[in-house]
Image 1 (cartoon, rainbow, N blue to C red):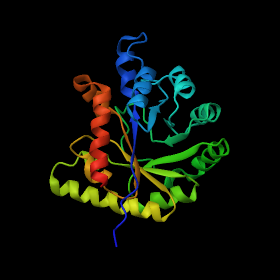
Image 2 (spheres, rainbow, N blue to C red):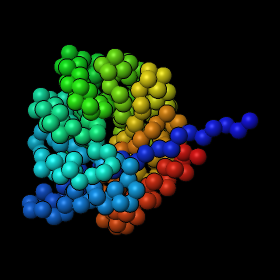
Image 3 (tube, rainbow, N blue to C red):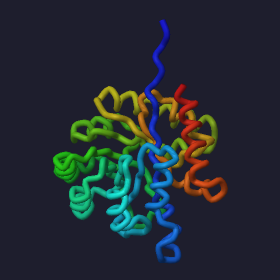
Image 4 (spheres, rainbow, N blue to C red):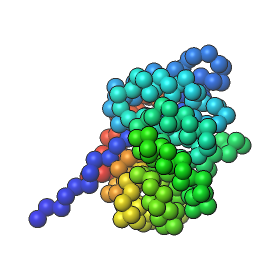
Length: 248
């Protein structure tokens, strides 16, 4: 009897840092929407864009254009605030991923504490679900956080892979991979679709892509940085090949 292969894994391309380069000088170049459309042409399975409260990279007009011009799913990353919930329910992207956000951070640090914010999260998740949006919660691979995400009615959890990506040696990385594997299995058992992301590169993505419960990887900074040297289409094709090989 032949064992069945894991389901194919999707690649979501985060285009935030195209906007970061644009905003360094102002103006309109490089255009993050053009990058998103190029990623779509090249085989990206979705586009992720984080509308931060301080608009440091993606802007409201970028999201409006992405929503209008993309034919693949748009995943809006956002803080769990009233302002962002209002924008999301008006735009109605395919999905919204709620993430922690602090003004002074350079990038997202750690997962969202859903256990400590159930009172504020519950009505916002309900509003987005009522608007037809798939709600995802960006969390650490912790059983209690995963269980709370399921109780809140999220469709997806995106497991934060930062601790795994930043591990200082092979032993530490193995420990973090074990936490991700346990978390992914538990999330699937709780009825949640499992995604993962943060700090993933060609060199470290394969073990995460090999986790059978992980259905989607969202990767941005590495892809956009590597595109400076190799071009965005080549980088996306290479990453898709690496994760597909890990899956089989």
